Length: 500
Image (cartoon, rainbow, N blue to C red; front, side, top):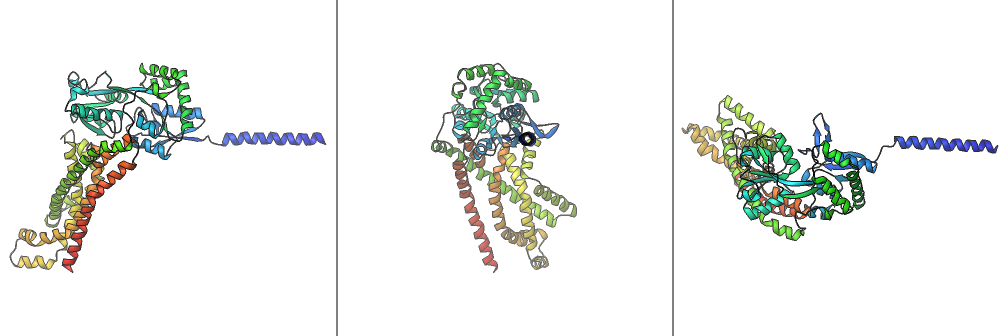
């Protein structure tokens, strides 16, 4: 009897063990969400040309290496490069890799790993200028392009004060080099990884071999995830020692003689990042950074206001001509103008800016400010034309017939009777459109115009927070738009009083 019960217990335990093993095999591994920017992110993170649903790059493989060592499954999260620090603080992902540079501001904001790659900030110029522009000092008074929120941008700001260099910031690493080729800028200051890729992609460029500065890439996580950061440090050190990192770097053709030196320094210092890194900028308080950036924000505000006023003037003139053509024109003219209005209203203004600035560069090389002016003005002209057309058609037909009976020509009727009344009807909504255009002017930063929003983004990227920069930016926009909104309400009230 006892033997039979013992056999039953043993069978039950065996069945339970098999069930546990089966359940464990069926339970998926926990996920490691890692952030990066696949937009123009090669060779760090880029969409696979054969399957855009997946990403590839040496940072992708390092993320997979870390996930495997942690016993987790990697899952990519797309985040704009300039927002990676803020997303890490928010907890949008567990870790982030995307050519993220090691700076004191970043280490004060998020938890950063030991460096895993040493890179050089290098100057790229046109082949014909290789002997003329060797250093930043040689570029005195010239335009130099880079990415916003990077060590290179900080270096250019210093050179701007020292040599009068004009720093031109971009959102991606492709257009700085294409603009260098066509002569919009005189040099590009970026990581040697990006410069080498640009040299393979474009002919006619030359990268100076001397480094302007040396810096490092790190993995970041949320400021409270110090345990995860420490585990990552151990994984990276192990991968440096057993050659796994080297194999990844060689696969993506980014390995060089500087990496063994970095690995030796980290091994000697037991993974303490301070001994192996050279800090690009000193840590700064929010107050000191605000005082430093406030003049730039005010200058950018002037750019925003000036651009908005000029673009609105262009929109008003072109909108009036479009409206008159659609009301008085022949059928072919009306069809053509209607098509223009529908195309401009039916496509994003961002796309129109790209087409005007980059798409037409082979035909006409417009300055960034002029391209922004044309893009906003021609886009809003389509909207203004609808307002003016409705206003023209709102004038009572009896007044027009009376003017014709009195012998007025159609031109005189438009100039003396119909036009003035239509303009009064359109004035209030036109003012509202000006407020909308003022806010839409933030889009021109994609074509290197440093307006208010762009300068705010630079400010936020350098201090690692959007709180103070965002509040300052909102306050400046309100200071510009509230008076305009007040004027619009006043005009509308006056028009209602005069017609009642």
